[in-house]
Length: 390
Image 1 (cartoon, one colour):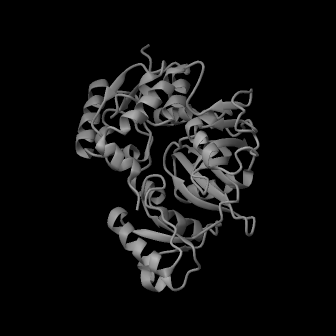
Image 2 (cartoon, rainbow, N blue to C red; image 1 turned 60 degrees about the vertical axis):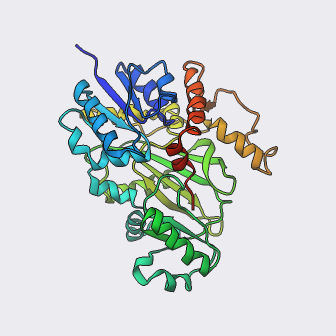
Image 3 (cartoon, one colour; image 1 turned 45 degrees about the vertical axis):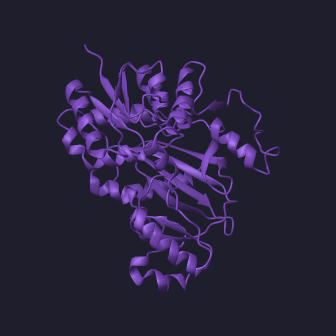
């Protein structure tokens, strides 16, 4: 019998590596696709074939046409998607691809409940799930809102990639000015109270089946992150937090969710309450730590797409650490805690330590990562996307 085939779209993104390894070890033929010739997924020993398509950022229609051609010609059993932009586009245009492949993404209306962070917050509020105080300028106008909130505040686009467009106004004048600039670039926004970054941050990963039953979950914290004032994690550790899992699942169940979901939480140091910050409808960058801890999200998502029986993966190893070395170096250079961190920055190896990119069994993707980052600096479109800030 012919081996099942999978295409992973977005091979320039870090999650491609655990996805490739997991599905390849399960006996599947896994191919990768990207708009970059120099990317970590193309360098992996586990990639069966490699495909190039136009940039989903600069040439969206061309990207969709090219990807549809790849899928039509190869009839992959399952197509998995990584990254904000590619996931957005595939969620919006999924029906064009379904005659030729299976894509385990929720329908667009449900997808937008997570992609639009203001909708996520409203659902959480309706369920009495703790969140930062959240305000919606469309209700009474930004001018009236600017006079009623306590500063500093956080101004967030309802939909954006990563932390793009987020600002921290400290006065009514700053809020009004930043609001109109952000709306012009990113669209509708909402305002939240600022939560001090001294509280522990957590991420809870889920995969739900079509009935809304959890088939895998895992929680890990963000011990170190960059920028040091609040940013993407550079060192994580798996932890046991059933309260966080139950909270995340409560919101996802209300959304009638299936597939992957990445829930972000922060412990408010002022009252000790863990609060939901957002839910991302995709693979998160650090998903490898969950796979290493015993929750094989890529395989579960593949089985979901194929409608194969799944055994729930609800138990995982705690105390496993994973570092993102390039970001951790930046943390070390910028943090006053560089020599006092626990675990030490200088702990690079150990039974409970893994790296987000580098692996002795698949070392070449790290070279692909470095080459890819270098090539980004030479591309005007990539520079504009990566460094676009207010």
